[in-house]
Image (tube, rainbow, N blue to C red; front, side, top):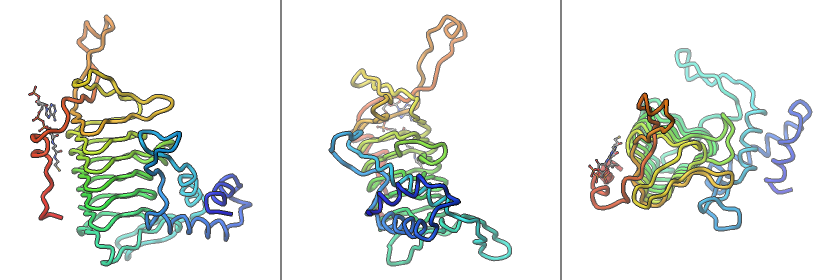
Length: 282
Ligand SMILES: CC(C)(COP(=O)(O)OP(=O)(O)OC[C@H]1O[C@@H](n2cnc3c(N)ncnc32)[C@H](O)[C@@H]1OP(=O)(O)O)[C@@H](O)C(=O)NCCC(=O)NCCS
């Protein structure tokens, strides 16, 4: 049976009755392919049923959840002072100098079962969870999170405290996708399967979830998640944090407005200058 079929079968089985040895072997195979980037939680595709050019491999998330069910709490302490306890199926990713990833010392963790391309830079403290995919030349800055199964392209800048949500808890269908050359500003939160297309710029402090409508002032359009499609931020859009008026009489009386991400413009030379990446840091 191919890996996908074995995972789907084990996923349906009662964990107390499962053949642990072959389930763990299957899970380890999945992690091997995730680690080298040959299997992804979502992958670019123009096949039927794609969302914004991406197909979700649901069985990968099932495999990751299977790993949590199979895992046993183990002492993974560094010494008697630095005590850690985690599931034995989820150690840290084994990284060597040959991987050519810069991991600046101090408080970052990269979980096994994630793919990190060479040339990625991780500033402390940052966390990259299982199933995540991070493309070459990307900077994961301090306090940034790359959540479970999130797909981050090449030359992306995840600024300080940018939070890219995962799909495991609470359980979500679609991982967040950040395409190549996107700039995500400080303190942003991108959650619930949002797709950010190439070269878009997300200004500091923008939060986007599956429930957040995004107002495009340039094209006079509103983007939102539907039953069939996730929230998709168009290529090159510059999204800033804004507000929209609430129009019920009570809200008007009290001047209530709601937070709203706004596409104020599309990327131009000003934006390029404001978001240029410093080559010498890489
Ligand atoms: C989005 C950003 C890059 C600016 O983009 P830009 O293309 O240079 O924007 P411009 O300066 O041309 O501004 C265009 C319009 O958007 C408005 N605008 C720009 N950034 C804005 C923001 N963050 N919030 C609200 N409005 C903003 C400007 O006021 C201007 O409108 P106006 O003409 O009515 O005054 C910048 O706001 C930003 O968020 N930088 C990231 C900072 C950061 O997180 N750094 C990481 C450190 S680790």
